[in-house]
Length: 248
Image 1 (cartoon, rainbow, N blue to C red):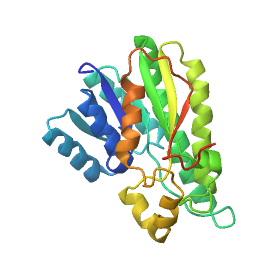
Image 2: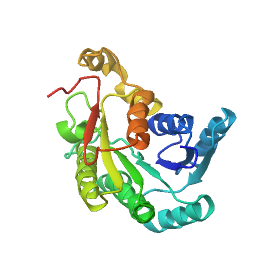
Image 3: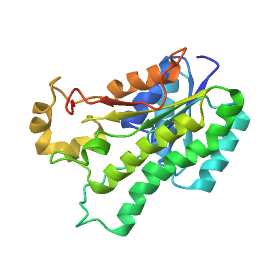
């Protein structure tokens, strides 16, 4: 793992930072990507202070040209990017009766186009190297459509469902040497979700068979497996990490 580099988007905090820390602990060099320059610099400094190899990269994942430029610069400096984790996202609680066109476009641009932008930038190098792993962070909302207790609604569910289609398509297109999988987190406790869960917390926990909210570390463990397991005979799969909340 010491010769491999992983890039994680939306990595300044929450699930993305948890994934970055877990992959760094596994021995990978990690690039933490976020549009919040101060926060992602602090995140990388935290990991470096813990003795891990981490560096920040500041870019808006929805900006195609900017992503291509940043990716080219990183690969020129660091060499191939072996693992891509598309995690960047925002919540959007507005229903179809409330949401504006601008709000819809923003959610799709960050979640779905952002993943496309980074896959477009890094997949050619993975194919050329005959090795690569892509993990897309979707959501159980892609299955449920965002139920009564969900903190995000229609645009978020649509974008996350799109990520599942992209995952399956890329698993076919980039085979046999690049494995592409998706993870669907359930209710995860982060700084972002804490305020939004609020008074619903007890009801949400009560709906989870394992009796607690998930943590970024719960998601990071599954990402680490998909990113580092050798050999890998898993591709095009969707793994729900939700404590059994949506067992079907």
